[in-house]
Amino acid sequence: STPISYVAGLAATAQNGILVKGGVHLEALGQLKHVCFDKTGTLTVGDFKLLKLDVIGKKNERKDVLQYLALMEDRATHPLAKSLVDGIKAEGITIPTSLFVKDHTFLAGEGVLGIINDSKVYVGNERLFRRLGMFESIPLEQRKEVESWEAMGGTIGFMSIENQGVVCAYCVADAPRPEAAQVLKELEGMGINVTMLTGDKKETALLIGKKIGLAERNIKSELLPEEKLALVSEMKIETDDVNPLLALFFSKPRLVLMCGDGVNDAPSLVAANVGVAMGAGAALAMETADVTLMDSHLTKLTYSIKMGRSVIGKIR
Ligand code: ADP
Ligand code: MG
Image 1 (cartoon, helix red, strand yellow):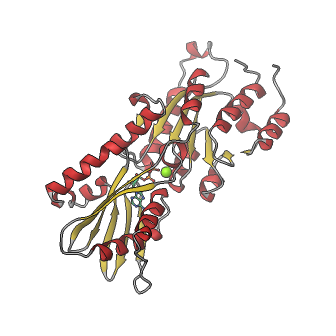
Image 2 (cartoon, rainbow, N blue to C red):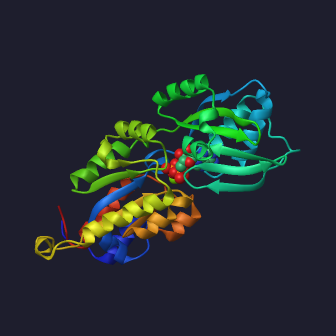
């Protein structure tokens, strides 16, 4: 095929539900060396299911503990939050209207914090509870039980209530997007390096990686948003700094794309040469992105890259 014009390229992508904010981004899409993906909601569907929910200790009624958890997660925006609320409601437990969460705060890469009935309540992952010095206080038997859940490939979390310590543990799981494996294979076939960047635990990230055919060396886990940003920036430096002699062999610079869905992915979307937002869900991600895949279908990413290559006349 012959190279096509910028206008034709933009029209074709728009027709396919891909919002490209200008010809300059199409050009960049045609020159990619690295593609980075967020895991949750990007390589996976982001539709979590609750697999396990255990109350720890005998002091509290299950109903009371789960009401606190539902109150906390009802206010949260992470894709896993809804599965906890839905799972608790499915047990016939309703969110009490007499209680409310004060000062609800998102703890990047860790979970959420809020105040219920004058007590500080934390919900989040192992990293959070290790930082708070509370992880070791979970009874060994319970920690072993939780460890056995890891094989399910789920995301494990806990809740603590001030002066009561850790009161429950849960496991929620999410599935890869059906087209993810095929798209990663295609990207590699196009000579593009693929990396998964995630805030989730290593074990969970590796299990998802295995399902979509991504090697361990291409998976970076347990990252805070600023660490995701740093990795994207490093890849850029690596590709910007092409030695002049080598540059003779590359007719075009080699760029980095970051594809994510969440609000906390916005910094790395900005840092990348091309920032891609999944779906029209997260308004902030969409605003900062150069490209938005309107219906979140990952094949639209490869389509955009091919269109970019066609625009700059680099066909292969
Ligand atoms: P990712 O998009 O890769 O999941 P995030 O930084 O959004 O990265 O989240 C990292 C981790 O923080 C999650 O895997 C989860 O364990 C924990 N987390 C985030 N938000 C919540 C929440 N509302 N409730 C419980 N845990 C949460
Ligand atoms: Mg995310």
